[in-house]
Length: 358
Image (cartoon, rainbow, N blue to C red):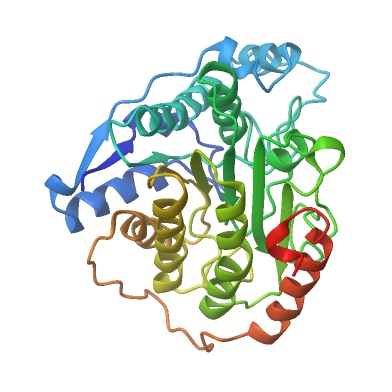
């Protein structure tokens, strides 16, 4: 099965500059490794478009978009209420951000229209961006714009977003917290130990969206077996009951045990397993329609291999995954604590879902 890869070399403009942990060479390093390790017949690179202002306005406020466009042109604006200090906008960056959002939109549209069963949006998963605030290296929330585009412009009524980035997707969570059309499942490191400090198990949505936000905070060091348990016990039964029309997964290599900004314990095989299991569930519930967004990762020696592991899980590629660092943990590390967390998550959601009411 051919896999679509929405990618453009112009994404290199999404770069926060020297000394920042988020540099744009991640995109080319992944694509070079992909072309080296995977037969060209197994994937097709699709040229993405730029997101339009109208598409961005499905999520973001106009004053915020105009601020980013002005400052990205090199015009200094003294009243910067829109960006956190860790997200310093660079010249030309807003246009590159539109291209990354456009890659996510392109990936979702070609999957929804049936051109490909699966598609990868390179650079996607900018899940910390809120309606009028950029933070955590994210200025536009491509995940949220994609979901809104599918609901408002393509008529979808049930979309499942599974966020496996090590950091909680606070922007995506906030945007869909009251929306029952979007089931948002977020597996991340315990927010008491990692930015952004949100994503606790009791945060389950509100109003009409009560029960449609699912946060699974994992203890530092949680490894492959813990993730597999969460996927089997939380994600799979919810997906089967919700019956989404499409699944969007976002998250790069930062849950890997050697990531330099996080403290989780996934191996390369674990990264592949997570996405493979998402794909297996998708085959049962939505004819295999999966959009995969890969952007995060903060160890340059791990990142391209981590992204390749994720892609290989989605496309069922038989690749030899060799760890660049020695794995000194056990794959069942923190599994006992994870079981307790899963129990608490299920208890919180019992009033909302039949699968947990037993």
